[in-house]
Image 1 (cartoon, rainbow, N blue to C red):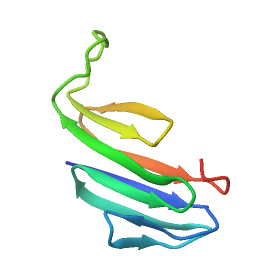
Image 2 (image 1 turned 135 degrees about the vertical axis):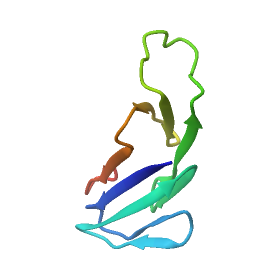
Image 3 (image 1 turned 90 degrees about the horizontal axis):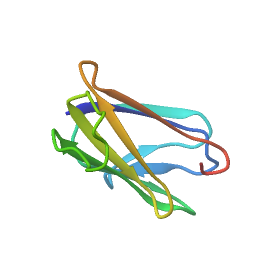
Length: 97
């Protein structure tokens, strides 16, 4: 479990897990005790936060952190790892990036 902090600088509201609304242009939220989560962003679709727990994605033998989250959109993915402080911050900018 981790805390997902989201800041929305986008011109439209976004939703987290289908029910938490983060309003447009500067609103933010801290969502505690997240596992698998998704953010719906108008114009992009869904951004998934897949909690891999302690499973590692193959091909990264140098990883030392214990916990893993795979972040995916339709055309981008990132692999986030943490140990200790379980906090992830995401900013949706005015260009939906």
